[in-house]
Image 1 (cartoon, rainbow, N blue to C red):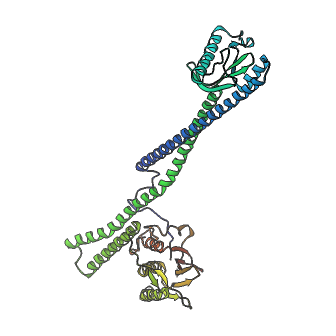
Image 2: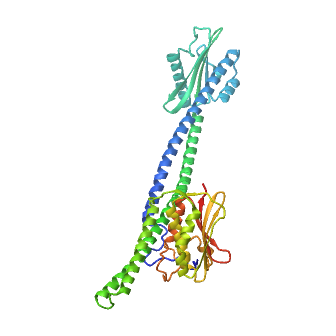
Image 3: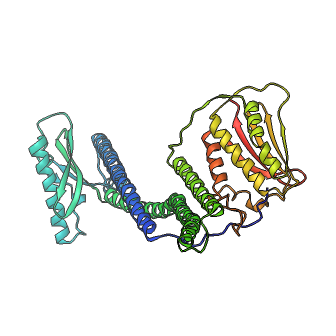
Length: 456
């Protein structure tokens, strides 16, 4: 079989386009929809993660504060003398501010003489608020002369200042022999607030980077997803244009001859009727092939699988083409396995149709005096049905194109019996049987088409 010409567009078929406005609009909408949905999910997850993380940070900070207050109170219970350096060290280690009252009087070493008047006023007001909350809610009076109890007591709570963020505070009273020691503690949350703000900016930056990467991914993925649709649309347009051209040719011949017959330019004889019959048959065959491919595309091709003896089927096909082989002056041969072969589960009529397409193509392209062989081989996993000829063969670059619709070898259209649809139909039949149809070179020259069908 010879396929020596290159694929070409038929007259009237559209030139390939990179991307039509319809697909550009679809691409844009799909990209925005995908990005919006994933972006919304990403934002929701980010907010949830931030809430959990911030709650964990605050809880850890509060737990640390409770531990520090308890440790400070224990140290004060054991201290007999208090030094300015020790208090400074505690404030530095625990990131707190401390006010200590000895029988209601602040210790002299805590007089903040270095502060300006406004700072001292704000500090006094803040610790006054802490003392009021401790007295009203927890009945702890750090600024009193005596607590009336021989047991140490302390409480921790949160406060909110109008000019400052929320902070933790604590109050404690430690009984002494000569009265009581009162402690007010203030722990600002500026550090964890800064940490939370930094974390939020980090998550925002991560989300922006993620959305940018997702946008690039969706651009690439949707382009790849739409590519088969674009290619299929292009093939459909070429298919329609090519089919229109093929249908136009016989219709033009029929109408022109009918016009010439009516005008008396040609006689209404047997040759005229034969020409009309030939062109009508061509058109019917083309329409039938197109309908079969349309059924294959819509997955509505009827299948009737049954157990078939392939050697018997091939013998029947061989006998049906003997007279045609003699008319074409071809050597027509068949080779079957000598041993018995198991039946194959397939649609007998479809396989017969596929073989007829391959044999008809071989007869059309093999020159007189050539030979064509029909063979059957069986392996452990597959049946192989082959049609071999010793014609010019098929160039390697075109082996993948010969199964495309309206691919034809005779660009001059001298052969009016083939439209480039037969091998497409054969390929669809093979796919319906979960098989494979491919072409390769015949040893010594020529082309071999092989159908592989699963053994079980």
